[in-house]
Structures are given as C-alpha cells and as structure tokens.
Length: 292
Image (cartoon, rainbow, N blue to C red; front, side, top):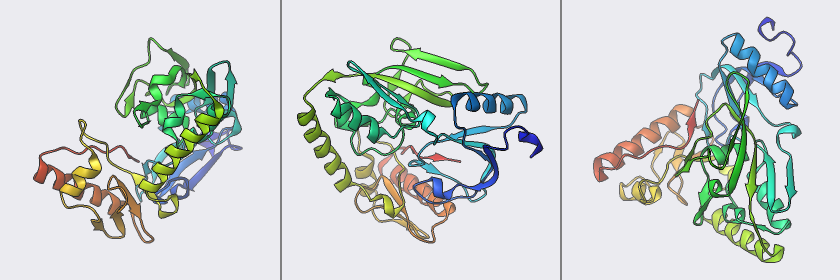
C-alpha cells in the first residue's frame, strides 16, 4: 500500500460499505480508514491533501446511499472512542462529532439539562445532526449549539462560535470535512420530567417511522412548510416501488430497501417520486440523503 505508507495500521483497501449504511447497499471504498485519535485523523487528511486523494467522512450512515460502483479515494469512518466523548459542565454538554445523538440527548436529560430531548428518536451522529441541522417537535439542534470544532480538507482545525454559526432548515454553516466536536448550552430542568418528555418524543417518532431492520433512509426534505410525506401521497406515490425498493407505508419520506434492492433501484425510485410531485403538484422535491 505505497500510497498510504505509514498508515497501514488504519487504512484498508476495497472495504465494502453496505454494512456501514442503514440502506445496506452499495459497493466498496477504494481506501477505508478508522483513525484512533484526532492526531491520526489530521495526519491522514494532510497526507491525502498532499497526494490529491479525495476524502469523504462516514458517520452512522443513516442518510447515505452508496452506488454499486463504490467510492474512489479514501472514506474515513470516525468510529473510535476518541471521536465520541461526551462531557458535561454546568449547563453545557460537549460531544464528539462521532457520538450518537441519542447518547448526547440521554446524557443531557440525566444531568437535568433541557432542550435536546425534543430530538429523541432521530438517528445518526452529532456531526451529521449538526451538518443537516436536525429538527423535530419545534426545535432544532442549531438553536442549542454555541461552539463547533471542525477539520478542513487540508487538515487544519478550525472553530466556529455562536456569532459565526449559521443554521437554517436542514442546513448549516458547518460544511468542512468533519465536525470534531460541539458544545451545547442548555437550560436547567428536572431530570424526571425531562426523561418523561424524552420517552414521549421517542415513542411517537418510532411509531411513525419504519424500523431500522427494514433498511430505511429518510430521503426527502419538507418544502417551504409543506410536508414532503403529504406531497408524495398526493402525487399517488405512497407505496410506489422500483425493483425491491419501496416507499414506506409509515412515512412516505422514507424509502425501504427490501432484500434484493440495488442502489440503482433507490435512485430510480427517487427520480420517479420527484417527477410525479413536480408534474402533478408543481413542487420541486429535494433530497436530504447523500449519494456517493
């Protein structure tokens, strides 16, 4: 592995990516790495920048579709403990970008810190939630975020504080290569009351979405206050399918990858739904799933 000489202990070749995504689809990464520390990550990214190797960062894969042809360049998976630490101090919670959002929420609730519990049931990592400004039940993660530390594509570490952070519907200013950590400033609350609220939001979320073992992905964004699920159903696409990929009966924003589904099936189904909504309702439906 001449290209990654010195990194053999963390870099593998032709790593299948399907098992790292909720859809369980797609080909292999040309190179795949799981660094164990921030220093290793920085060194690896700088090496790629110096050698013109493209880099992508993989989180939990809840909103990721990988093409059957796979991914060229290097895919970095931030699964090590160094990227998922969660600490609390006063009314602040600091979490690594690789930490599961659910773990951050439960930590905050246990410490009697309110604000994030409304996001209970949203899958994925802190990094993904911040990049897409995850929202639910009238709140979004951005409104509680007071600092974020990121890694650029050249391997530099940069920080944005409250006055620099920008959040909008399903988007944010946090668009560097990777989000290393974030600080959330929350409100004091009663742990028991917060636990009940968190459980309520979680139960409602789970009852309205396909189960993880169905291999789902939430593909579409709401549009200008219009619910994407409702638009898809109005266009007659509830339950629509291509190959073994099908629109979820529970929530039409989701596509479920049944056994035998290919990435091409999902992409064709996305196009089919977008075309139907555009032709029948005059609305351009945007995707939130990443396609590699």
